[in-house]
Image (cartoon, rainbow, N blue to C red; front, side, top):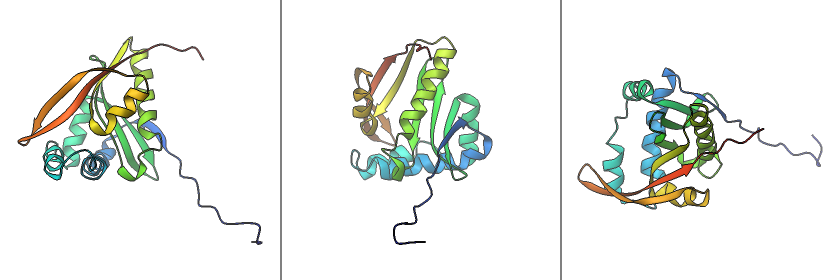
Length: 173
């Protein structure tokens, strides 16, 4: 290698697909770390512990959820690094989580784009989500409408979130 050439780290490629049973253990870890680390600036430690304990940190629980929801995953280097659970009949995003160190790289946005396309293909004209404080402002900037603040309780802790909605429009390509 000459002085003008420098070694560049390989570009990591993220792919998107439907979840598989083997993604469930990674989903559990993504959820836990997204809540405990990713939401640290918006929620107290007590709130995050209560939130994280609301869903088991076990692959079997997340595998069972895959049967309930259309689950889209972001996959990188053999691991699920983000996921979105979609309740298609209700046009609602049930969950959206990304590994904390990958926040801000468009993974959540791309999962939402795939979910919007999926819903449009099913004849659904709007998408809804109950967004945490972590996600709320990002969605407002992307054209989602605020339908109001909500407070939910998890393990005795109050958690603030917002109901948001977005109209879906088919775009010809």
